[in-house]
Image 1 (cartoon, rainbow, N blue to C red):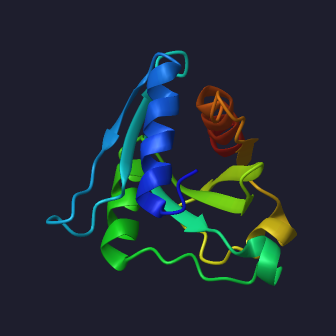
Image 2 (cartoon, helix red, strand yellow):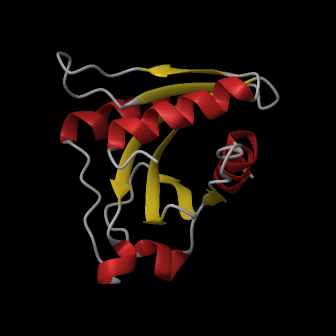
Amino acid sequence: MGAKEIDWQTKIIQCVRNQGGYGGKWSSSVQVGKPDLILRLPLLNETFLMEVKLFKDIAATGKFDRHIETTEKQREQLGLYEKAGGLSCVGVVLYYKPTHVVLVALPWTTERLSSLLMDGPVAQGKWVPGVGFNMEAIMRQFKERLRG
């Protein structure tokens, strides 16, 4: 299983496509400051921007008090998109071991991973080998928690 952030971005895109949606890279290595992914799931009638972050040493360190490193430009883009009526999030991939991977969708304003312990996740889903993440369920949960 991929151990790099770009690998998980690709997996998320593929999960969305497998569920009948559209997923693609929105950022590129030559264009700095855009969130990583643009995702649309037909049943939700929403388009999401997602900045993906990978934390792969949680099990070894047990440290949840970590900074979620989004750039000022990424936060600006996510905020402007949300202000215009879209949904923006940070998708944190918590890689404990190959058989235990969780995707947590958090508001783009979240700065520390430890907020999961205090506030709880906004939306989450487990990686199922051979299936992937249920992106429709994760993004539906995210939408409902943010918009009611």
